[in-house]
View 1 (cartoon, rainbow, N blue to C red):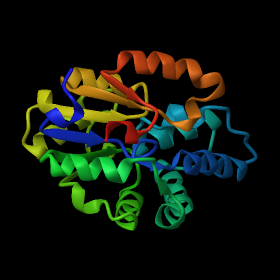
View 2 (view 1 turned 120 degrees about the horizontal axis):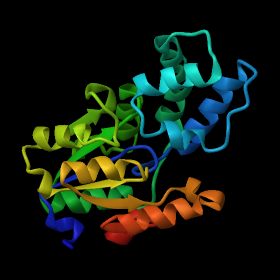
View 3 (view 1 turned 45 degrees about the vertical axis):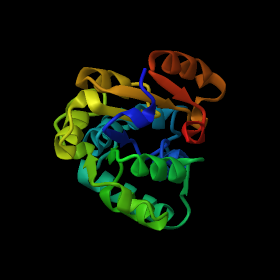
Length: 220
């Protein structure tokens, strides 16, 4: 197995991998559903996280019987989340330092995310990371979500590198299927929601990955 520095490109998920933002989505889903007097089930954010926005909104509408359009749901989410991405969301431990080292080694860097474009850009600029990424790919710009190879191949194409020369950093277990189908290597990044009843998910996820880390700082 190559070192993470032995690739030509590195592709990073945003939420839960580069930035500590899963609590934003947990709170957002809870507060959004509470407006309609619905109690969200435990682990909802881990189901929705790998989805494209235009998949997750219909999922919420169908699952909870909401009398809203996907566009209305997404607009509500955006207004609820943007302030936190602009002001309160912090980096995951070691994220800035790892990006700096990868860049020094000459790797091309990309973000592949299901986040809102405005929120993604805001948090990267807030932490002075935007300059590291020549490509930002959004799940809604491809046909299928992260469990499929579409977004990963889209990144490789935009970076002008072979898929086999890419390594992906992700915290969602289902994404590994898409990364493998794209022919790329995979780093499993621990996220705090793996604690408690989800600890078994982390053990299974980390066993399937090429590299597994509790903190990105381990790779510096």
